[in-house]
View 1: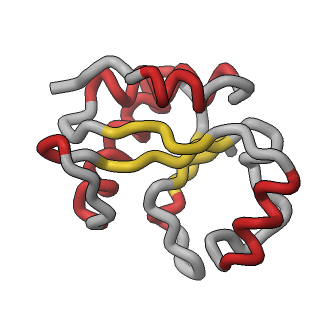
View 2: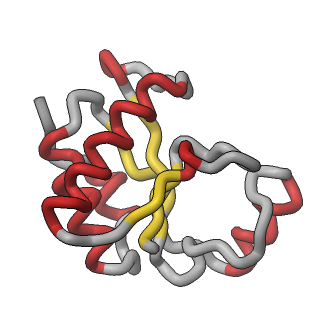
View 3: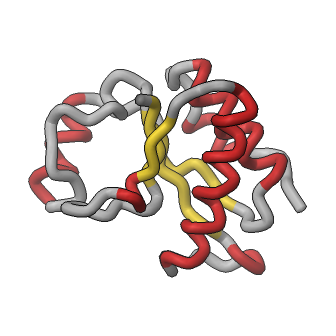
Length: 122
């Protein structure tokens, strides 16, 4: 159980708030589902592109300030977007945040726009 973050994940954590980085590292140590960080800090231009494509619903994203990350699940070494894997990963993130006394929110808990790969600082 648990793993070290790969190079892609480490690159995608550059510019991310240190509290969020610590939560991601601890979540990786305890998660039974392998994940990679696909996005951390975003430019305003990148956020506008995602909004235009419908992949985001706001220009007020915490990614712009480095207070959010998106992850992708790789159970058994294969990419999956199945909610069940993100639920397990979210439990690792929530446990990590609790251990570190850092408040986070998971996009999979949202009612209007479920965003299961998304984690952000509160």
